[in-house]
Length: 153
Length: 287
Image 1 (cartoon, helix red, strand yellow):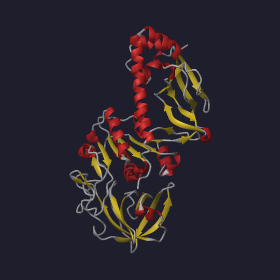
Image 2 (spheres, chains in turn brown, red):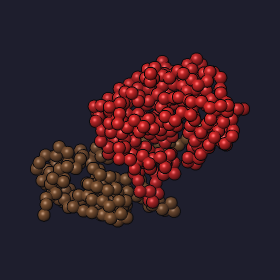
Image 3 (cartoon, rainbow over the protein chains, first blue to last red):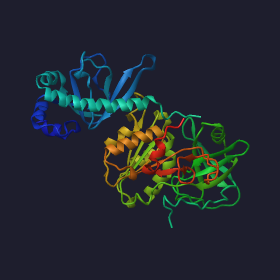
Image 4 (cartoon, each protein chain N blue to C red):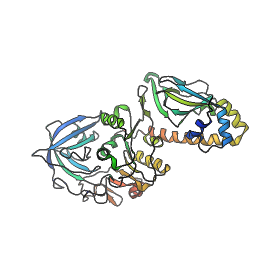
């Protein structure tokens, strides 16, 4: 079977990652595919993985009672889906549903958590990458909350 | 000679302070609060040359006058096209106009998008909400002379799928092989198959040469600030970015001072500015 290492190396998440860590990540990686409408995960489920999206679009949704499901953001090619695997209680807070046929690398977060505890350099590397992503998503969410396109008289 | 950004088009098709009567030929509702009007002169025919990014003053008789971007095709200057949003007393009246109604027009005024400076370069057009309207003439001009430019990308963000302006044209542009179009919305029902998120986040999804790209940005000022920061983080220099600024234009010829913004009059030196030229004024916290 073809190794996922070159595919993993090409993903922006792995940019400038040291070779031993890339190999370590490859050991935790699985190639996955989702059809449109298929859920990658659901709110409340155990969060034991994250996804490097290779192709397609995934909608991150929240079920808002009478308003039904609302798409909060979409994650596409070159982006990373999911950070709940990194923080207790390791449960998804949103649903993730493929909007288009989606190919991704699923990384075993449970396995990676153990490795990060054992090797804090790896842990710091992962946290830096995820903190950057969280910062970007927080900025975007703040901008969304401002409702900037609302007409002002 | 084609006008440059530093030498705005000064030739108005009427006396700059006297409105000429124009009749509404077509009125079209674009979204729940945005409308497009096509106007022809009340008497005779003529051509109304303008440069992408310029605006006219539209006078609704008995109500008042308002600056409106020209949103039509600069290659088809036999009619005037304006798209506006119903937000104040005058624009509400504009949006109620019907075929056959008469308005007064002064213009065109102001600076324009850097069409000549963008020649030979990648062009990134970043629009937010109603900000797509003043950029549409630039898109028309680029597509009419497509070989003149490098990669052309339109990134458009708006509130919801129902607020998307010029939907059918966006679909046409998206189907072209020589232009990339990405649309995102802030909120969407799960039936929406497109992107959800803010427009600056689309920048990392497209390819362009940051060293020689020209960015034309129009939308709410917060959106433009975030877009500028994101472009800077991708290596685009602020001198390669142009934004259209909206202020309270009244006379449109730089006399009255209503639209003074720092040392500039937006109606005369603007509305399109090179970002590094206007950045100090944008940094001032107005209340």
